[in-house]
Amino acid sequence: MVEPFSASSPQAVVLLSGGIDSATCAALAVRRGFQVHGLTVDYGQTHRVELEAATRIARHLELAGHHFLKLDLRAIARSALLGSEPIPKDRPAEARAGSIPPTYVPARNTILLSLALSLAESIGASDIFLGANVVDYSGYPDCRPEFLAAFEHLANLGTRAAVEGKCRFRVHAPLLFLTKGEIIRLGVACGLDYGLTVSCYDPTADGLSCGRCDSCQIRKKGFAEAGVPDPTPYADT
Image 1 (spheres, one colour):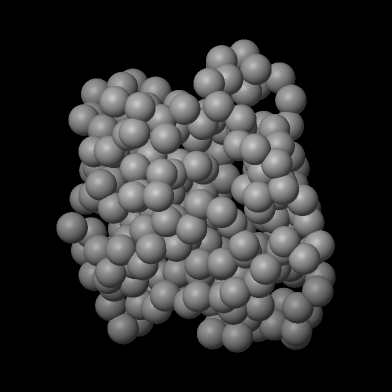
Image 2: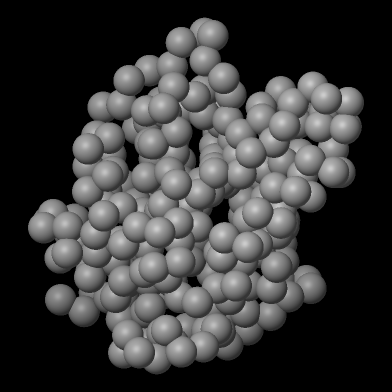
């Protein structure tokens, strides 16, 4: 288990979705000595099992706080993750790397980071963590380092705390250039139980991961590369 924070520890906000990357990011932030406040957003995603996973992870890591926010993007946005089209299945790695997939949710990370920034400013936190990654990922443009640097700049231009000189906001993406296998090994070293996490975009009615969507394929590959047993119950096996 990760070491507990002290009363004098600095506070941080972590976007906690319930998947491998966000869980590892939260565990790493705790390990670095932050009082971590997880922020989980119910944005209308069809794979709602990840919301339950986020709660399990927050309890496992004994976070300082876990905040839930409902913001249904289905009213304005279209994405396979919002149910407007089918989840792609059985795509080879070269297809996943070739284009932005239909599971892209328009401006999702911009929205989520803005919410995390509002929470951070409200509780006096200067640090925001998210599990963005540009190695084993599905080609989302809002996971790139250029985007994250631009958002950090925005955060320090558009907030009262930064303008008045009370803090400088920092956006941390510590997993950005790691493979999924390296991320899993890092989480194991932090004492993270990956059996609590969920990656699947299209789980079955009884909660099994499909094993065939992009996210499941990346997850399988990551555990194999890490040499760590995959605790995920897959429907395809």
